Structure formats: structure tokens, C-alpha cells
Length: 102
Image (cartoon, rainbow, N blue to C red; front, side, top):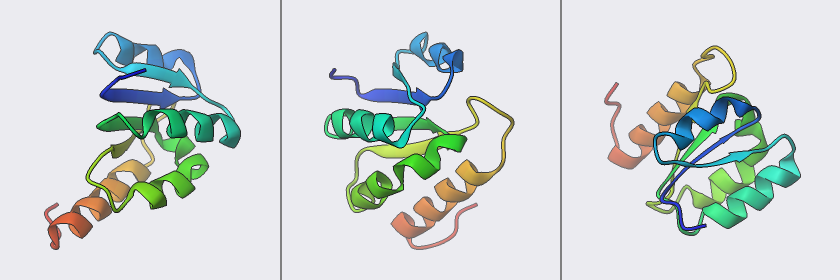
């Protein structure tokens, strides 16, 4: 796939993102997440991941953190917001810009 924007979640709730033009993936295990990330991280610019799945992709996030793309954003796709995604985004922005913006 050559999708520039990707959404990954553990349930069918991710289908909403398809209507917005995202390429979507449903994953439930670390192995599935690894396969999807290997496939999409080379050509994607934005990857939206369910907050609950962040733990399954730490190796990929660390490896990709030095690159400009893809931008990985965690959103509460399958559950209520826990704040983890916003905290990670805040830390990433602070690291990239060099100061705390929000």
C-alpha cells in the first residue's frame, strides 16, 4: 500500500478513518503490529494508533523517533481517552521544538 495516512486499532472502530481517506489496519498482537509497522513506516507520513496499542510498538517508535516522518499520533479509538496519547504528543513536540508549547 502507498497510503500517506494510516490508522491502526484493535477493533472495527478504525473503519471511521477509512471515510477520511486513511488506510486502516486492525491488529491485536505485537507480531501483527510489527508486520503492519514494517509495511507502512517506509511510505506513510502520519500514523494514527489507538492509545491502548502504543505498548505494542515501542521498538518501532524508538527506531523512527529520529526521522521526520512518519509522525505517530496516539488517539483513543477503541476507548475513552486516558491522556497517554496527548502526553506522548506533548513530549514529542517538546523534543522537536526544544521548548514546551502546550
